[in-house]
Each structure stands twice: as C-alpha cells, then as structure tokens.
Length: 159
Image 1 (cartoon, rainbow, N blue to C red):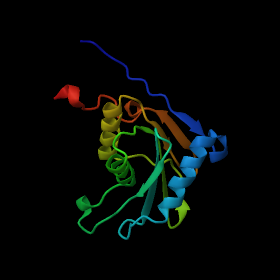
Image 2: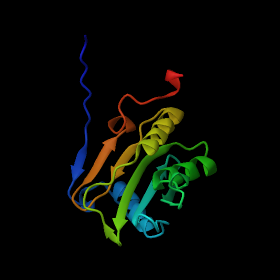
Image 3: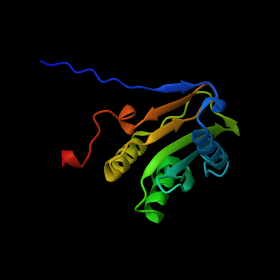
Image 4: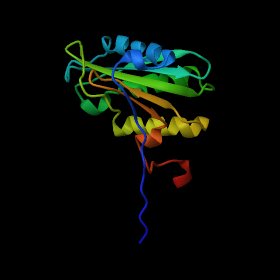
C-alpha cells in the first residue's frame, strides 16, 4: 500500500480591502449581481464575476426553477456565457458571492460539485489555473486553481 497526501493551500482574508485591487473589483461585481439572482425558492442569491484573459469581466447569478435540477448556479452561468461569447479567451479568475435576505452570508460561499467540474474543464481547455475568490462576511478565501477545490478531478486524460 502507498499513501499519498494531498495538500491544499487557501489564502484567507478578513475583508475585501486586504485583497489586491483586481480581486476587489471582481468581488464587488460578484456582490452586485447577487441582487439580480432569480432565487424565489431558496432565497439564496449567488453572484459570480469572471475575469477573462482579454480583460473583459462577465457576470452571472443563480437561476432557480421549481423543477430544481433545471436551475443553474451563478458560476456556470458566468462561465458558460464567457465561453459562448468569448470562446478564445481564457478565464483568469472568478469571484463568487452570496447573500440571504440581502445580507452577505457569513461563511465563505463554496461552489457545488458541478461548478467545480466546470471550472476544472475550463482549466484543461485553456491549460492554465483559475484564481478562485470565495466571498463571505467572516472570511474571503482565495485559491490558485480548481485542484484546491476538486483534487483528483475527472478530465479528458481519464477518457
């Protein structure tokens, strides 16, 4: 038997002012679009902002549906919009924020498994890690690359 340890590095910031300026701008956009989410069932409003390699920032928010599996998370809305409209531009970073009753959530919001897999695919597609900024009132987490969120991920090399 062989044992392998997987190490994950997470940078934690107490508030938005501690982040580099580019991250602050992106996170403010993610916070802004939480208010435009369609979340009549959960009341959990999520916003995402994606910075593309060409300098463009695109946003998305969660879109719920009474048939729950038919909705879509903010992260994938933003990434899929970016891929559909800027197919040749890589994703440099993504910021994700969430609010409940108009108030920023306490614990840093984390992407679901499907969003983690979509982020992993974007990294493979453009052969570069994505900077991930996860917002919360108690802490803002910053990770360099989806492997920190999804170790041992499935990719085209597994096919």
